[in-house]
Amino acid sequence: MRIVDWLPAFYAVGIVSALLTRENKRLGDLIAGSLVVRESSFADLKPAWQTAQAPAGPAQPSLGADRLSPDECALIDSFLTRRLDLAPDVRFRMADQIFRRLKSKLTLPPENTLSIEKVLETLAYERRVTGGYG
Picture 1 (spheres, rainbow, N blue to C red):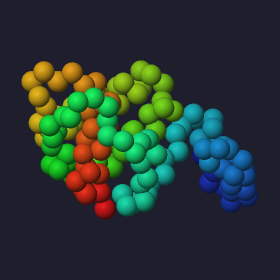
Picture 2 (tube, rainbow, N blue to C red):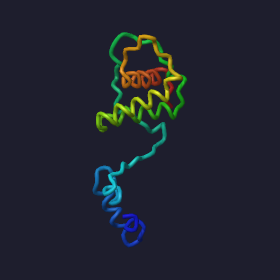
Picture 3 (cartoon, rainbow, N blue to C red):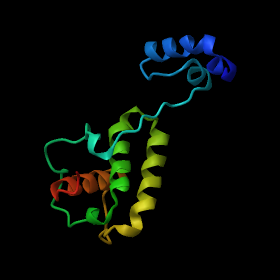
Picture 4 (tube, rainbow, N blue to C red):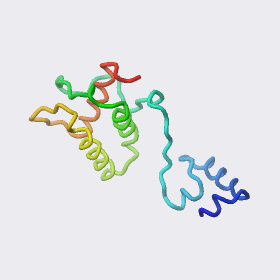
């Protein structure tokens, strides 16, 4: 399929397939089963997962969202936005990898009873409330 993508006469095939698929996949992407990723600036990232209310449950002490970099916050937001589109095992694995990457920067209570996704939601909410999003 790479030849089809490279030949000028076949550019139209790639353009048409990108226009006709919901995920904007080229013909090669469809055959390979690849995932199309769009990059956007951190400021353009909209928290579609976010509700207007704080995470449910008793008030939690700060988990340390202020110690996260903008890229780490964008990673959390991106995961939370897309998690419902992921297979359960992929969703759990991704949340776990993100959590492990950030764990050393966080202040987790010794008796942490929050799920990994709730920790990520709380971090994103905490960062928004403190004005850490630009």
